[in-house]
Image 1 (cartoon, rainbow, N blue to C red):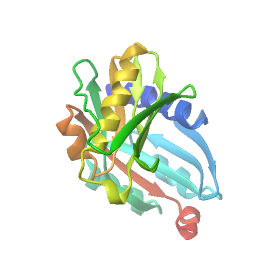
Image 2 (image 1 turned 180 degrees about the vertical axis):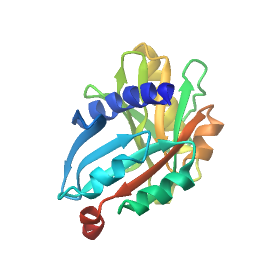
Image 3 (image 1 turned 60 degrees about the vertical axis):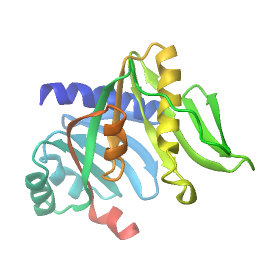
Image 4 (image 1 turned 45 degrees about the vertical axis):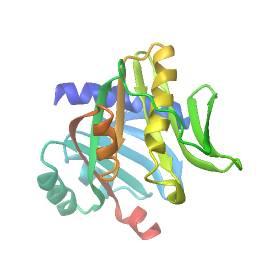
Length: 213
Protein backbone atom coordinates (compact mmCIF):
# COMPACT_ATOMS: atom_id res chain seq x y z
CA UNK A 1 0.00 0.00 0.00
CA UNK A 2 2.99 2.34 0.15
CA UNK A 3 2.64 3.30 -3.51
CA UNK A 4 -1.08 3.88 -3.07
CA UNK A 5 -0.48 6.04 -0.01
CA UNK A 6 1.94 8.18 -2.01
CA UNK A 7 -0.53 8.54 -4.89
CA UNK A 8 -3.31 9.32 -2.43
CA UNK A 9 -1.23 12.11 -0.90
CA UNK A 10 -0.62 13.54 -4.36
CA UNK A 11 -4.30 13.27 -5.34
CA UNK A 12 -5.48 15.02 -2.19
CA UNK A 13 -3.21 18.00 -2.87
CA UNK A 14 -5.09 18.50 -6.12
CA UNK A 15 -8.48 18.14 -4.45
CA UNK A 16 -7.80 20.74 -1.79
CA UNK A 17 -6.33 23.07 -4.42
CA UNK A 18 -9.46 22.69 -6.58
CA UNK A 19 -11.90 23.41 -3.76
CA UNK A 20 -9.80 25.75 -1.60
CA UNK A 21 -9.75 23.32 1.33
CA UNK A 22 -7.22 22.53 4.05
CA UNK A 23 -6.05 19.21 5.49
CA UNK A 24 -4.23 17.82 8.51
CA UNK A 25 -3.13 14.55 10.09
CA UNK A 26 -5.17 12.99 12.92
CA UNK A 27 -4.24 9.70 14.54
CA UNK A 28 -2.01 9.06 11.54
CA UNK A 29 -4.83 9.58 9.02
CA UNK A 30 -5.22 12.25 6.37
CA UNK A 31 -8.22 14.44 7.22
CA UNK A 32 -9.65 17.10 4.89
CA UNK A 33 -11.72 19.95 6.30
CA UNK A 34 -14.61 20.03 3.83
CA UNK A 35 -16.67 22.38 6.03
CA UNK A 36 -20.09 21.65 4.54
CA UNK A 37 -23.28 21.26 6.52
CA UNK A 38 -23.53 17.55 5.62
CA UNK A 39 -19.81 16.82 5.65
CA UNK A 40 -17.50 18.65 8.02
CA UNK A 41 -14.45 16.42 7.63
CA UNK A 42 -13.46 13.56 5.37
CA UNK A 43 -10.94 10.97 6.57
CA UNK A 44 -8.98 9.29 3.76
CA UNK A 45 -7.22 6.02 4.52
CA UNK A 46 -5.89 2.78 3.08
CA UNK A 47 -7.25 0.60 5.87
CA UNK A 48 -10.71 0.46 7.49
CA UNK A 49 -9.44 0.94 11.06
CA UNK A 50 -10.28 4.64 10.84
CA UNK A 51 -13.98 3.71 10.69
CA UNK A 52 -14.26 3.42 14.47
CA UNK A 53 -12.76 6.88 14.90
CA UNK A 54 -15.13 8.44 12.37
CA UNK A 55 -18.14 6.59 13.78
CA UNK A 56 -17.48 8.13 17.20
CA UNK A 57 -17.30 11.73 15.99
CA UNK A 58 -20.18 14.08 16.76
CA UNK A 59 -20.30 16.18 13.58
CA UNK A 60 -21.27 14.88 10.11
CA UNK A 61 -18.13 13.20 8.78
CA UNK A 62 -17.16 10.88 5.94
CA UNK A 63 -14.52 8.20 5.43
CA UNK A 64 -12.97 7.10 2.13
CA UNK A 65 -10.92 3.89 2.13
CA UNK A 66 -8.70 2.84 -0.78
CA UNK A 67 -8.47 -0.92 -1.05
CA UNK A 68 -7.99 -3.99 -3.24
CA UNK A 69 -10.68 -5.79 -1.20
CA UNK A 70 -13.80 -3.61 -1.34
CA UNK A 71 -16.26 -6.23 -0.10
CA UNK A 72 -14.15 -6.98 2.98
CA UNK A 73 -13.63 -3.28 3.70
CA UNK A 74 -17.34 -2.58 3.29
CA UNK A 75 -18.18 -5.25 5.86
CA UNK A 76 -15.63 -3.91 8.35
CA UNK A 77 -16.77 -0.33 7.92
CA UNK A 78 -20.39 -1.27 8.48
CA UNK A 79 -19.46 -3.35 11.53
CA UNK A 80 -17.76 -0.25 12.97
CA UNK A 81 -21.03 1.68 12.68
CA UNK A 82 -20.66 3.65 9.44
CA UNK A 83 -23.12 3.70 6.55
CA UNK A 84 -21.56 2.94 3.16
CA UNK A 85 -22.91 5.35 0.54
CA UNK A 86 -20.52 4.73 -2.38
CA UNK A 87 -19.25 1.13 -2.39
CA UNK A 88 -17.86 0.97 -5.91
CA UNK A 89 -15.73 3.97 -6.82
CA UNK A 90 -12.30 3.66 -8.45
CA UNK A 91 -8.96 5.42 -8.01
CA UNK A 92 -7.35 5.91 -11.44
CA UNK A 93 -4.20 7.33 -13.04
CA UNK A 94 -2.94 8.19 -16.51
CA UNK A 95 0.31 9.27 -18.12
CA UNK A 96 -0.93 12.41 -19.81
CA UNK A 97 1.38 12.48 -22.82
CA UNK A 98 -0.63 11.15 -25.74
CA UNK A 99 -4.01 11.59 -24.01
CA UNK A 100 -6.67 11.86 -26.75
CA UNK A 101 -8.10 15.26 -27.59
CA UNK A 102 -11.53 15.89 -29.10
CA UNK A 103 -13.26 18.70 -30.93
CA UNK A 104 -16.65 19.80 -29.65
CA UNK A 105 -19.54 18.44 -31.73
CA UNK A 106 -21.66 20.76 -33.83
CA UNK A 107 -23.69 23.18 -31.74
CA UNK A 108 -21.19 23.31 -28.85
CA UNK A 109 -18.17 25.45 -28.01
CA UNK A 110 -15.39 24.95 -25.46
CA UNK A 111 -14.51 27.66 -22.94
CA UNK A 112 -11.27 27.51 -20.92
CA UNK A 113 -10.54 29.66 -17.87
CA UNK A 114 -8.03 29.71 -15.00
CA UNK A 115 -8.67 30.90 -11.46
CA UNK A 116 -5.86 29.61 -11.11
CA UNK A 117 -7.31 26.09 -11.38
CA UNK A 118 -7.94 25.03 -14.98
CA UNK A 119 -11.67 25.20 -15.71
CA UNK A 120 -13.34 23.88 -18.86
CA UNK A 121 -16.95 24.37 -19.87
CA UNK A 122 -18.73 23.06 -22.94
CA UNK A 123 -21.50 25.49 -23.87
CA UNK A 124 -24.50 25.28 -26.17
CA UNK A 125 -25.14 27.96 -28.79
CA UNK A 126 -27.43 29.62 -26.22
CA UNK A 127 -24.67 29.75 -23.63
CA UNK A 128 -26.07 26.91 -21.52
CA UNK A 129 -23.48 24.81 -19.69
CA UNK A 130 -23.67 21.29 -21.11
CA UNK A 131 -20.54 19.82 -19.50
CA UNK A 132 -17.69 21.02 -17.30
CA UNK A 133 -14.70 20.04 -15.21
CA UNK A 134 -11.74 21.29 -13.17
CA UNK A 135 -8.08 20.26 -13.18
CA UNK A 136 -5.61 21.74 -10.68
CA UNK A 137 -1.94 21.12 -11.42
CA UNK A 138 0.29 20.51 -8.39
CA UNK A 139 3.90 19.84 -9.37
CA UNK A 140 3.74 17.27 -12.15
CA UNK A 141 0.31 15.95 -11.13
CA UNK A 142 -3.05 16.99 -12.59
CA UNK A 143 -6.21 15.97 -10.73
CA UNK A 144 -9.49 15.71 -12.64
CA UNK A 145 -12.31 17.03 -10.48
CA UNK A 146 -16.07 17.57 -10.86
CA UNK A 147 -16.30 16.19 -14.37
CA UNK A 148 -20.00 16.60 -15.13
CA UNK A 149 -22.36 16.42 -18.10
CA UNK A 150 -25.90 17.77 -17.81
CA UNK A 151 -28.65 15.21 -18.27
CA UNK A 152 -29.95 16.50 -21.59
CA UNK A 153 -26.50 16.45 -23.18
CA UNK A 154 -25.20 13.00 -22.31
CA UNK A 155 -24.04 10.36 -24.81
CA UNK A 156 -22.64 13.01 -27.14
CA UNK A 157 -18.98 12.67 -26.19
CA UNK A 158 -18.89 15.87 -24.16
CA UNK A 159 -17.12 14.22 -21.22
CA UNK A 160 -14.29 13.27 -23.56
CA UNK A 161 -14.19 16.84 -24.89
CA UNK A 162 -13.87 18.21 -21.34
CA UNK A 163 -11.16 15.74 -20.37
CA UNK A 164 -9.16 16.39 -23.53
CA UNK A 165 -9.28 20.15 -23.05
CA UNK A 166 -8.29 19.87 -19.39
CA UNK A 167 -5.35 17.60 -20.18
CA UNK A 168 -4.14 19.85 -23.00
CA UNK A 169 -3.99 22.79 -20.59
CA UNK A 170 -2.40 20.69 -17.82
CA UNK A 171 0.34 19.48 -20.17
CA UNK A 172 1.10 23.11 -21.00
CA UNK A 173 1.57 23.67 -17.26
CA UNK A 174 4.10 20.85 -17.01
CA UNK A 175 1.83 18.08 -15.70
CA UNK A 176 2.82 14.51 -16.52
CA UNK A 177 0.52 12.29 -14.45
CA UNK A 178 -3.26 12.45 -14.09
CA UNK A 179 -5.13 11.23 -11.00
CA UNK A 180 -8.84 10.96 -10.28
CA UNK A 181 -11.55 9.24 -8.29
CA UNK A 182 -14.28 7.89 -10.56
CA UNK A 183 -17.85 6.86 -9.94
CA UNK A 184 -18.93 3.48 -11.28
CA UNK A 185 -20.61 5.28 -14.18
CA UNK A 186 -17.48 7.19 -15.15
CA UNK A 187 -14.98 4.31 -15.25
CA UNK A 188 -15.90 3.26 -18.79
CA UNK A 189 -15.23 6.76 -20.13
CA UNK A 190 -11.86 7.08 -18.44
CA UNK A 191 -10.72 3.65 -19.55
CA UNK A 192 -11.50 4.59 -23.16
CA UNK A 193 -9.29 7.64 -22.70
CA UNK A 194 -6.37 5.55 -21.45
CA UNK A 195 -6.79 5.84 -17.68
CA UNK A 196 -5.88 2.79 -15.58
CA UNK A 197 -7.27 1.50 -12.30
CA UNK A 198 -5.07 1.85 -9.22
CA UNK A 199 -7.49 0.35 -6.69
CA UNK A 200 -11.08 0.46 -5.46
CA UNK A 201 -12.57 3.11 -3.20
CA UNK A 202 -15.28 2.67 -0.57
CA UNK A 203 -16.95 5.82 0.79
CA UNK A 204 -19.01 5.90 3.98
CA UNK A 205 -20.73 8.35 6.33
CA UNK A 206 -21.16 8.40 10.07
CA UNK A 207 -24.71 8.28 11.42
CA UNK A 208 -24.85 12.07 11.87
CA UNK A 209 -24.11 12.68 8.19
CA UNK A 210 -26.48 9.90 7.09
CA UNK A 211 -29.37 11.48 9.02
CA UNK A 212 -28.79 14.77 7.19
CA UNK A 213 -29.12 12.95 3.87
